[in-house]
Length: 190
Image 1 (tube, helix red, strand yellow):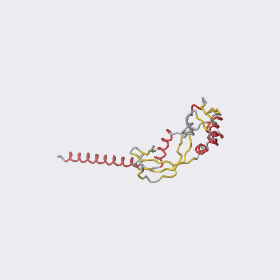
Image 2: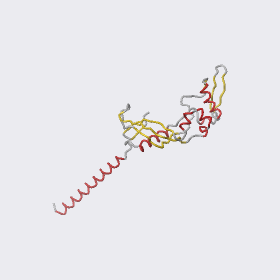
Image 3: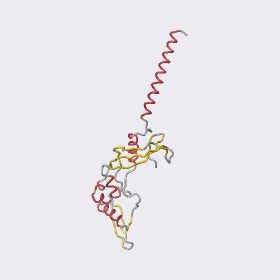
Image 4: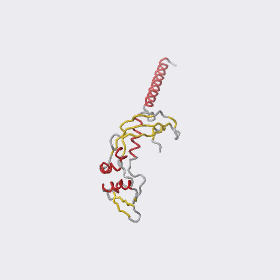
């Protein structure tokens, strides 16, 4: 082998080594910002995506027509009547009030969802540890604001009748969630 060719091979080998080193450095740097790292940014992104698909609702276990004789439940449902979302009729034979959605209420029935959460801050989280799903899990405490709240949900009567909804739409609500670490990032286990 001639010295010129030997020198050319050494330069090629050095360039290849330098390229491999650069790729390894890039992979290492990218790994530090991975979606699987337990960071507030990753938790926020996961929770926002989850809550965008999972709205908060007033009535999770109701089917219409709905009848009740419970005075507390009747009071709650009557605020939705006052907001023109439901119609009511009293059934004397069984002493219950029967509710059906109005034309306007049909847009929200049967669950009467009142918006979705947007995370404003991650307040704390536990170190990831193996959970019942088999994946590492963390318990996250966070603040959120409710987005896309309809006008009827802002009514003082409805807010008074549904204090949990009033707290959640206050603009400074807190909650907790469990997140599981998977190969593709953090997820809310179902």
